[in-house]
Image (cartoon, rainbow, N blue to C red):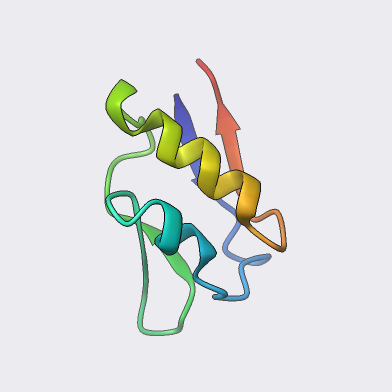
Length: 65
């Protein structure tokens, strides 16, 4: 699974970090960044999907490969 962040859309709510702390963090500007590569391991796929679902501004895009 691949995940991408639309940094222009992200408003830094941090919901992605709450459900997927192994994948996301906020940079110095308060915008989400990936802690992993764009390819998310199978073990983290559930967290990635949950993060995309809870993002209030739909800034996360998933591609199931």
